[in-house]
Amino acid sequence: MKKKILLIISFAVFVFNFVSGQQGKKIPLDHSVYDSWKDIRNTILSNDGTWISYVINPQKGDGWLYLMNLETNRLDSVSRGYSALFSPNTDFLAFKIKPPFSFTRQAKKEKKKKEKMPKDSLGIWILTDLSLLKFERVKSYKIPEENTSWIVYHLEDELTKKDTVGKEEKKQEKIKPEEENEKNDKKNGKSEGTVLVIYNPITLSESQFKDVTEYHVSKNGSLVGFIEVKTDSVDHSKAYAFDTSEEDFKVSG
Image (tube, rainbow, N blue to C red; front, side):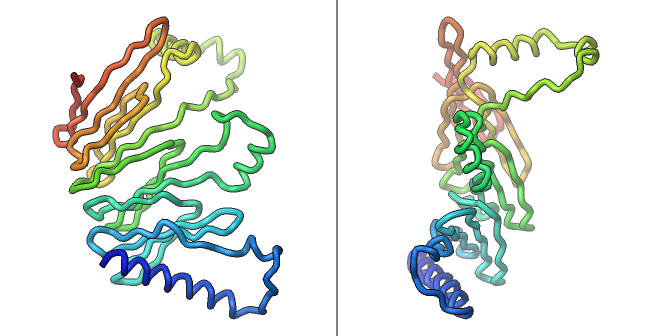
């Protein structure tokens, strides 16, 4: 039934865009019009059948992620959104947000290193009031399949900011020993992991863990397993299990 609904809606959106394009002056089909063609992708339906989301991409440039309420016909959109997932409770829609096409193209022209390239963000649409949350520099996220409102996302490496503090200000700047050690660790490559965030956008509960290299989420969302790795002369790794009901963690195994 879901597949049938998605096919009908996708076809309706296609027809709407096609008819809209035909209302103006007809243009001969040649290579010059290819960039104006658009395609529909990633059509998904919420578990309760109330919401649908899909992406419309041009052949070149920035696409749009759409969110439609099938009961009220309200349609909202976010530029450059993609890879969307509804939460199993149908209380939010999570999705990645690409950097602007022009930014990425310019960075490629300048042959910037991978770590200096523009990075994706994470968007979370709260469906109860359609408020939108955004988090920068997110490389991946996961949502449990069953009854839960948790989302887990993994951040990119932090950018090294240029020091813009004046010489006189620098003399007065005090750095705590633990902060100095943390800076030296990053400089010497003693941590190959990045920050993992376990977040509930409905209750606003949040836990963060540093130096995480990989993570897994259980099907029912009760447990989040992750590995912390620190490297110096010898690799040190620990496996953890985070209990979302208790909002606490323990060393696994």
